[in-house]
Length: 148
Image (cartoon, rainbow, N blue to C red; front, side):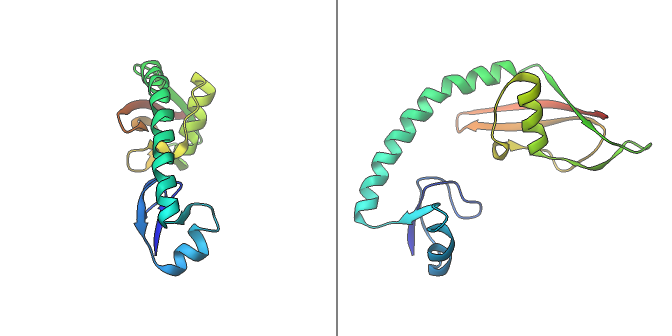
């Protein structure tokens, strides 16, 4: 079954991409969740219009993303975590915690899905994450995990 994705779907494809998936997956999950539409002739024409709108929206947002990059260039986020005496934290630091820290400390709203962490952050220390804000804009962000 050929579908046009309306949102990014992990392990399937990116937004506005035409993909082929199994019939049941498309019919029972992607279409009811409004993640995709059937790739028929009318919807393919609509896809071109959606791509134009998305491109103009992204062009407007590019300047905003570059401002965020400039703001976060030389800063270090502080993330508090409960840790034992050896410096190992209880649990791990997630991209959702990093997104919340960006919002709290610098008033920068970033979707957690656009934050890529290094392996697992399970000890106190300084780490670097990468923000994928736009295909042309990626910025590293330093963060320090400190004892809470």
